[in-house]
Length: 262
Image (cartoon, rainbow, N blue to C red; front, top):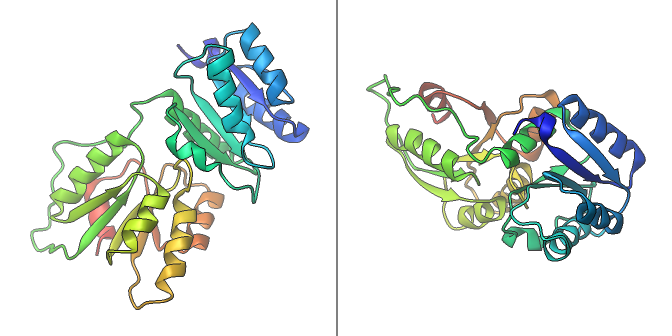
């Protein structure tokens, strides 16, 4: 099903954001219906079948999860993709860590490149880093040192990136989300951390801030490298502002990764 056939329900009570999101979705050829509240959104979902939901989590951060829960219960939806939007300074609902649906989280204000990336991720489960199976490390003198922490929530990306890391001779651990990265790095002094930017719950920049805060109390400092498909100025600035040292743009080659891990 292409975008022209996909029907989107946008639940957003902030008029300017609703208009901007609707215009962007229409430009991507989605068929968009808007609702100003969770309650009205549920009624629309019961009356009409939608393929995708974009829901603001509200000032308490809980409205999005409550909407999804009611949707499954009252409208009979199963395995529906949903993009939660979160206002600045609003905390992400911790219940989303155990939310068993295709979903992602978009921090406001709007970044149009980020919207496209997140929609691609939840609508295309096989979206991943491109891999060249014939690619090999060409520099025989390269000697890996230390262990890499790979922070990535997509299982296919974990596999491909793990293969890259292993080809370079590194051992590695995997963290499936930002909080797991913070917890693992508290017990192991990783020389390198490959940090995905867009993850549900605690994202890459948020995890980096927490890691850097803890490192101030000790002598070790990891080299944290962002992994992103979004090379916009705003996205790159956020990476560096959070304390990251560098970034990799998907898809990348084995040789490019090797240059970063030195």
